[in-house]
Amino acid sequence: MKRVVILAVALLALAGGGAWYMGLLTGPASRIDVAVTLYDTNASGNADLTREHIGDQATIWRWDRNDDGSGDVVAYDVGMDAEGQLVATGEIAAWDFGADGVLDSGRVPEALQELMRSPGYLASAQAAGPGNVELVDTSLREFVETLRGGYDDWRLSGFQLPVLGAKLPDADRLLPGARRAYRFGIHQGFDMYPGHVGVPTGYGAPVIAVKVGTVVRADTDYVELAAEEYDEAIAISQAAGTTPEAQLDQLRGRQVWIDHGHGVISRYAHLSGIAPGVVTGASVEAGAVIAFVGNSGMESASRGGNSGAHLHFELRIDGKYLGEGMSADEIRRVAGPLLGAAE
Ligand SMILES: [Zn+2]
Image (tube, rainbow, N blue to C red; front, side, top):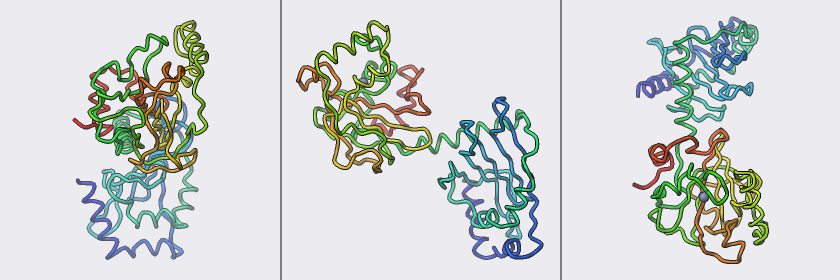
C-alpha cells in the first residue's frame, strides 16, 4: 500500500511540477552523479546484483537472477520529496521484470524514465563504471530475498487450471511425484481424469491455456504409437530402471507446450486433437481452448482404443516440474492457489 501511495504522489507531482528535470535534459550543467556498485550475491565470482545511485534521487537495483549476464529484475527505490523532486526513499516503489514493464505498483515515475533517458544520466552512468565486485552482506542478502519473492509473486501469478472450473485431482497418485511403476518412473504432472477434478474431462473435452503465452510446441502432425512402439518404450524404461527422456516424450503422446516467459512453460499431453491456429509461434490468450483431451501415447491408444483418456498437465518452472521434491500435501498447498483451483 505504501508503495502505491509513494507512486501516486510521484505521478501527481509529475503532472504539476515535473519541470525540474527538464534542465537536466537541455542545460549544459546536466551532469548527474551516478555511483555504481556491483555485488556477488551467490559467491559465484560474478556480479549478479548492481546498485546504481542516481544522486539522491533514486536507487536502481538490477538483479541477474540466473547469472546469464543480464538484469532480469529491476527494482526502483524512488519517491518524491516535499519540493516535488525525485528522491530515494529506502522503499522499492516499482518493479520491472526483464524490462517488459510489468510492475508491482503501477509504473516507474515518468520523471525517472526521462531522467534515465537523459544524455546527462547516460554519460554519467557510463563514466561511473562498474568498480569492484563486493560480496553481499547480511542486510543485502535479505534484500535479495525480497527481490526474489517479488519476482516470483509476479511471474507465478495469473495462472488457472487447464480445464475450466476444475479442482486439483483428488487422489495423490494423480499428482506430480507419484510413482509410475509400469515405466519405472516418477509422474511429473497433474492427471485430470474424469471423476477426479469436479468437471468432465473425458475424451474430446476442451483444454484451455493456463495463462497468456506463446506456443513453443504443437504436435499437429502427430502419428499415434504403434503397439510395438509402445511396448518398446516400456521395455526400454524397464531395462533402464527409469523412463529415459525420449521414451517419456513418446508416452506423453500428442502435446502442446506454451511458454509463459521468465522460465515458465506449461505442457498438455495425451491430447486427442489440437485447436485450429494453435501452432508453434502462435500467441494464445489465457483461457483460450487450445486442444482436446485424449489418450494418445497410452497403451490403449496404441491398440486402437480410446479408453483411459485424461489430460496430463505439467507446469515447468526454471526447468523443474511444479511439485518436484514436494509431498502431496505441499503440492496441494502450493499448486491450488497458484493454479486458481476451485475448492
Ligand atoms: Zn500424467
